[in-house]
Length: 464
Image (cartoon, rainbow, N blue to C red):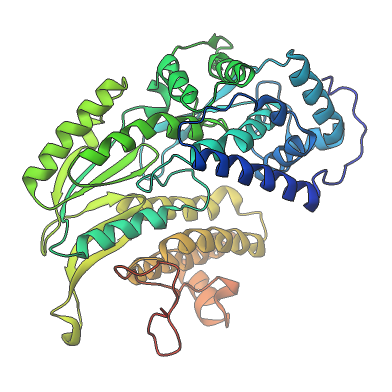
């Protein structure tokens, strides 16, 4: 594909509603076939990867996600100028002829929220992302038919809050599972052995062209900052479209083996907790988990592995951005009630403050105040939209107050005045805090054994 030959004009979307429905129908058919026969191995899937409607749906997913450019420095916008249909034609021809070869990914380091550590991401080219998305659309339903309820990460129609609800339910149910093993897998995406991963894939998919395509994606390598390409026999590069699915396929072996172990496993990608009834059960769960992962060539991250007893007055655990703690009701009416509460963790709070400080930084003083408010609102809505499903009233109020303070300081610096000037402008002279979004009254507290999406009615009670 020669991107020098640009058309210069933007092209409309190439995926119609009809084509989207056709792809969904294909996925439903594959899912039902896999669900009906757990022993079935699929021999003919490759022709579906380069189907035009599948490629068009894959392009829509890539276009919607935008994302950075790969090693060829070609962006999604440039593909739109070049012509999306033209690119899809070229990819379809290459896939049919067997001449398509995945290219190396571009390596970037991004900071981990609330930490000084940095996470490595591998960014494929836009064309490679389209092919990965097409492959995922076809093979995901096959594996999804096998995945177990204990797995929540990067799966359709399953969210972090579904995983968090399990903790609430299990801590409350019966005598309660309040001994918790919390851990995660060390360098999971980088450590998965390719050979064993392919064996896991072949339990369901034996189409040799699909297997060759997956091997090509795994072996494509990553271009380092010095321009060298590093190839490895391990890892599903984090950042690739197909990587989370392949990681779930591999870790499904842990989920499957856990049926015979004690405790309730909750896995979100490489983050795990095991809810147990006693300390001894939690210690046995740790031994079993280490053994299962060792068989897969993986290991637990020692610094994040510990056993926590959820009890009143004791500490808690962090999982999926929330801090969880066993507490007693605050009001006299509810002092007899004890439950597992959750609110944003310290890292999550620090990440919010860092982002707000970045938006209102000194280097942005020349930007209009309306733009700063708009960016603050965009972040606050997204951040609060996630953390509102918890006991987070106090933390949301703190973050909103911090945003008000930072906006006041921004205005004061912009006018070369004191902080009091900015605070007066935002809080006292503006009827709506200059349009800064309110986070009051949006919290939905989790309840055991009730869907977390339920909303309170006018009387403040949960609808059944």
